[in-house]
Length: 600
Ligand code: GCB
Image (cartoon, rainbow, N blue to C red; front, side):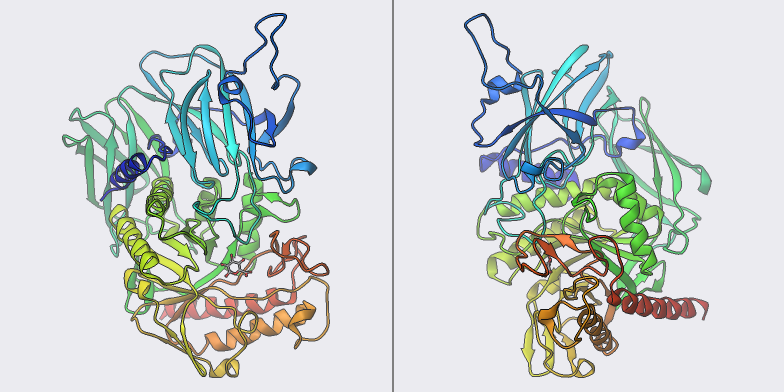
């Protein structure tokens, strides 16, 4: 099943179950198109009790005469920056969970024969979109990009765009009511208007076939069914080829190429130009092969150890969502300094600019959807919602070779409903993108004495096993770190997708007492975990939790937390804790070993 097909079936399921939320799959790769950017200051109305009238507000209704009035107004209202979370922009919105109406006027000149799309990088968490008083559509999911075609609703001259954003936590949502990060609300990523010709390239997928260093495989989808030629040019690789579309408007790409492969040491990206008879899109695409062989993760034909780190899309110093390229660069530069070649983008799709920059800087990536603990797997709507998010994530980033793993979930407890849902999602993701690896972070094991056995039945559906295990923190050591035995019922590579503990930067003292939050305790815990890692023969990567302290309202210790999860290797000000150096040394050694293996 292709991504567009997954979305079609999901769409049908959602329509049947009464949920509207389907955005069109169009203009993937906005940067390759002519866009009008709508970022900046937007007028807002804070709808504390969610009592605003959509009809009146979306039309920005004005009093009709001397006796008429409205009980809302965008005129002279407060403003919020877009992109940006609302929580960090106004003190009274720090913990706000509810509705805010956003308004933006913009000028536009209609051009004959153009399709026009309104494109949102992300709105957290639900949004209703209105253009010139007409409802365009709704979207659910705070971390995916989406588009709506507005060719018929947009007009020449002044246009009125109103967005209702709502970030209430709900039990039937993904993520559900409880999660361990800040519930940032608002239009958190950029808004653009994109234009395409009448007959346009809707989407394309151009990557190496799994395991091959030279076979480019994929497709280009055209909007019309009219048979035509699609030209694919990669000048840097001497490629200039033409493919024919079939009766569904799709041209299958298959060609042999001599390529400089993308790798963390040399993150080579090629300029790629795709043209149909009426449209041209440009992109920068890298080529690498990724596969699993037995218990190895193999990049460009060589086994690789994933020297990873996780981070949230948050700038701790500013206490807000990372929303600019400078923000992304800061987080990624920290990861480079730690010696990483791999990022776990936790726990939701992060911005396209983070993904693109990470790829340019030479990071392999794990990208995941927010299926995080406590999900209502028995609810018949959940598979539809999760697959929608999965489809949107793959849609946006399928041409980014830096992404090597799609992750389906984090810490979900085995049960028949959970197993069936995730198994189905794994199959759908694999059909949509056969070129990448599938994983899921889980935390249920069989423990007996000093043995921990990986036996989660979901493992059958995964390429890479990933465990979150907080040895020495949430779980006491069953034996000395060097004597803990990890066994797996599956002949697959394992990565530690989470481990770690809390420490308050600058707080020094005993390395033996967890409740004192000392740097020394965290440092010792990292040393112990590394000792354990050295004894796991099928370990192929580690991802400490987490790069920097992050904000989490559920962390209530008055002295050490006050709304912060302190598991960062860096403090909330970006200062290095002692454990940072332990991990840095481990990665230096791993890098040397990898280098030696490449030279042999
Ligand atoms: C986990 C979760 C992560 C939490 C972390 C913690 O297992 O996956 O989201 O933040 O533990 O600090 O407890």
